Length: 164
Image 1 (cartoon, helix red, strand yellow):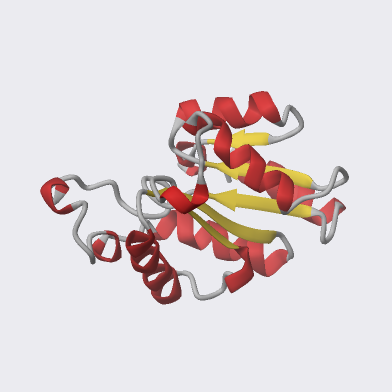
Image 2 (image 1 turned 60 degrees about the vertical axis):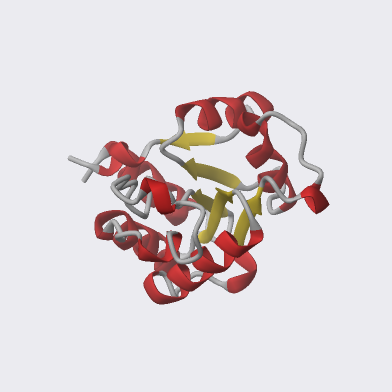
């Protein structure tokens, strides 16, 4: 068992219904294979990503033990959001639909002008309360550190931390 797995299991055991875990998608629970990079803006690109089963197994385990499991992921446009939702339905059907937060950053209707490294903090605040124990698992160090800067009580985790 890794240190982070032990910490999260202890949090779940001692703080039932107070643990919230926010998981990124790209590079965390899906592959970041770039051989299809030229197709990134085509519909279907995100749907074809390979699931990282080790991480998905941890997600399911923590969810089944009582942690509130969220997806918090960026995409560029709404049509990419549909790909990600389809992927999640197929690979992570244990996550509640209302706990899936996919942020299409380049849609003009969202009017997101803040630096990417801080955006996830705003969404985490909307879905948590001050007495929650919050973990954020993301492969982007800049986003992790920016979110931690805005939310100092947050526990930040890299997907690598789950590998023994």
